[in-house]
Figure (cartoon, rainbow, N blue to C red):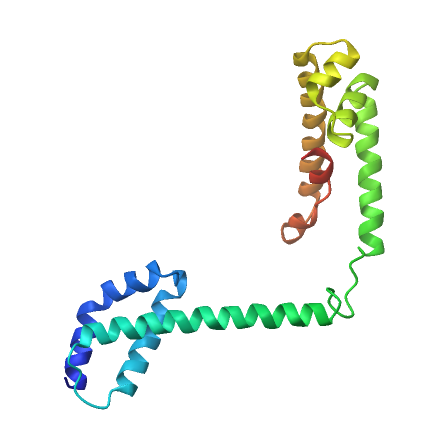
Length: 188
């Protein structure tokens, strides 16, 4: 089959080839792989092809195998590099900056103040449940109150923390709002 014949089969089978690649895990790269398939098929053709559609499917399958092998090599290379570097990026500290530490401490102090302003019982229930990991039923039994009362105290605390979080986010410029992480660890 000539180059024009292979091209006609390729163009006619393009949607099916795209589905074939997507089904084999190409995902968003299916279009790029289809382009690569045509480049390789048109460059590799040295004579007539008896079954051009089977030829194209085989090439597509080989492209996916090559892609998987390359991904495995990349993972092994990255793992080896990470192991050689001691699991950490050289020159990059795992410790938060002094500024982040100060901001986190200030945020924690504000959370403590807000919880205390809700009353001793609400603060104690919140700390027992969220920090100590005590089940709500156990808190209710220990304090001699209903499960519903425990839930109401927790809702009151969560509402205040959400309001605090929204106030912090509103104070930040739009590009920095994602950096206001911290209450999630306390409230979420």
